[in-house]
Length: 570
Image (spheres, rainbow, N blue to C red):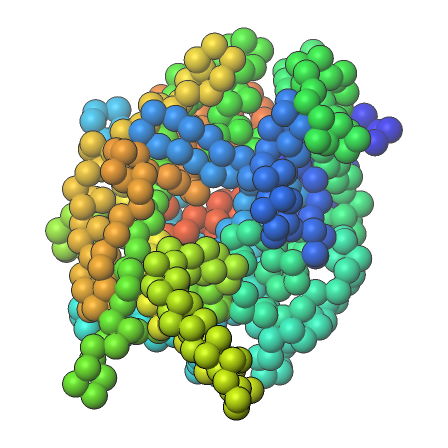
C-alpha cells in the first residue's frame, strides 16, 4: 500500500468494479482497487447466531461484516460489503436484459427511462462476461439433483398456468468441465484463486445468499479479481473512500480511511480516522447505486458541473418476495402435505418470464423465480409448529415411560422419534418466490444532512406489483398452498436487493449523469460503472447487465487510452 499514483483507481469490487479492474490491468494499466470490506475465503462466512450478529456493516459500532442495510422512506435495501461485492450474497442468476425492454422514452417530457444502448450493442459484452463467470444451468434431471422438490413444484404450478418455466444460467460450478455433476468434488482451476484455497462443486445447501463456504459460486473474487491480481492489480481491502476531487493539471485525488482489523468489535469514531491519499489519471466509481451516488452527492462541491440528473431515476428493479405456505396435494383420494423442501439446492434454480405491454400484453413485465434458504432456517420454521410437536411429545413420552417401566421395554425407538417431527408441513411445504421486473424508476436520492436519503414510494408502481403478486398468488393456488406477502408489504414498504439508478446514463447531461460509455459528462477520465448508471429497471436479475456495461465502458476507456498514446508518440 505504499504506491500512491496509478493509471486508474477503482472504488468498489462489485460487478462493475471487478470487471473494470481486470480489463484495465490486463491491458497493462497500473490499477488500484479500493474495497471498504474484507476478503471472504471459503469457510469464513458466519452461520451461528453469535457470529451472524457481527456480520453487518457499521464500522462506527465495530461491525465490519458482510451485510449493509439501508432504510429509507418507502423501502429498504440490502447490499454487500466485501471483496467481490454483491456477488458474495446474490443468488447467482445471469440473465440478459430483454431486447424489447431497452425502452426509449422522452425523459424530458414525462417519460421515465431512455436506454442509450441496445441489446445488440451489449451482446458481445454479455458473451465476454459469461466466458469469465462460466455459468451452468441447474442439472435438474441428474441424480441427486432430480430430488430438488422446489424445482419440480415450481415447474408444475407454472406450467398449469400456461407459463413457460426455464432453468436460467447460474454462476455456480455443479461439475468440472466434461464431467458429470457430483456435489462436493474439488473444482479444477486454471490458476490458483486469490484466496489460495480449494473450491468444491455445489453441495446443495441453499446458502448462496449467506455466502458460500465451499467456494461453489463463481463469485467475482474467484474470477475477475483473481485474474486482475494475476495482472498486478493492487487490491486493497478495508479501505473506505471518503472524498475525491479533480487535480490541477488532470486526474483525480482519492482519500480513504483504513478500517484496521484490530478495531473490529470496538466502537470507533470513524470521522476521525486518518485519511490516506492515492491519485490517478482515471477514476472509476463502482460502489453500487447507493454508494456511488452517495459519494458524488457528498463531494458535489468539487464537481460543480455535474448533471442535475444526479440522484434521479432510482428504483428497486421491481423486487418483491412472496411465499406459498403449507402446500398440499391430492394422493390416493386424500389431501397430504406437498414436499417442497426449499433448503435443498441452490437458492434459485428456475424462473418464468411474464410478458410486458411492449410484448403486446397488458401491464409491465416481470420475472418470478423459485427460491430457497439454508437448511438451518427450516429448523426455525419448525419451531412454529411447536404446539403440535408438544402434543406429540406428550403422547410419545407417555408411551416411552410405560415401555421403560414394563417388563419388556421397547428397544427400537426410531419410529417414535420420527413421529415427534410430525409431517413438517410448515418447514417442508413452503416455497419462497422472488419477483423482479419493470417497476417505475421515479425515486430521487438526496442528502439529508450528512446521510443519504431516498424518496421512493410504490404508488406509481402499484399496478406492476399487483400484477406480480397476482401471479405469485395463482402459483400458490396451484400448489394447494396459502399465499403470504412479505411482512414488509403490510407496512407499505418493499425491500430491494437490486437498487438501481442515481447516476443514470443519457445521451447528454440533460438526460443523464454519464454517457453511453460510462464517462461522467464534463469530467474526462471520471467513470461510473455499477447499477447506478441504469436509466431504469433491468427487469431480470441485473448483475449480468451491470458487468456487461462495465466491459463496454472498459473498451471505450482503453480505446481512448490507445488513441492518446498514439497522439503522444506522433
